Length: 246
Image 1: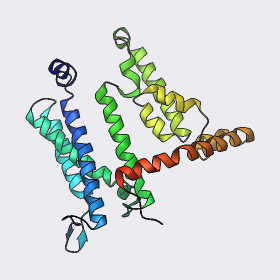
Image 2 (image 1 turned 90 degrees about the horizontal axis):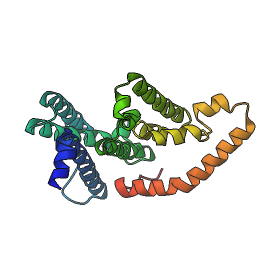
Image 3 (image 1 turned 180 degrees about the vertical axis):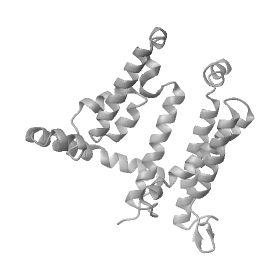
Image 4 (image 1 turned 120 degrees about the vertical axis):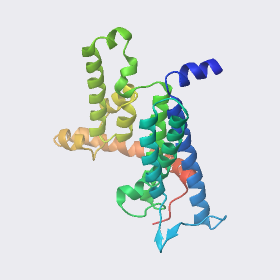
């Protein structure tokens, strides 16, 4: 175990990334637990206010992100300073993304349906960082052999092709597949070859004169949403709490 840890985490300089990811996930879990207790009126916790102004936890999150980010740049990839900066950065990002919806809508939508965007941002960020930690690189560069790495044309072609797949998937209204596909190219390819969402830019551009394609896109989107929206909402409620009824 010690040899694996040194070979896969310490030597490649991934320890700060592991610490940042752990701090990020732990901060989100603790923050959501505290906010749910405050919402239920339980425990010793309460909202933080100063002069009648409600201080959202995104504020200290931004401060810690700035300190941790600059500290990580200055501290390199090894040593105690780098590890401490990574932890501060992870805590800050956890606090910021927990209120991602507030930043997006410029409104306190924490316990509303729109607040689910924060949960999606946290889950997606954790998944992406976890993939990078596991050895994946953006746009499939990790799939390139050593011989191909010496050939810049091959690397550029691989990156450009995978980026194109991710861009097509995004244009087809499959944002999650596009983002994950930036790390795992096969995911972007799946999103690129499947039918577009009926309300996506791709559908408006290429399905406007193809009624059968529009009908198929609507039918597939209906069945997909009917199958997965319930489990996705249940998962989000389990993680972050059920939103207030509208």
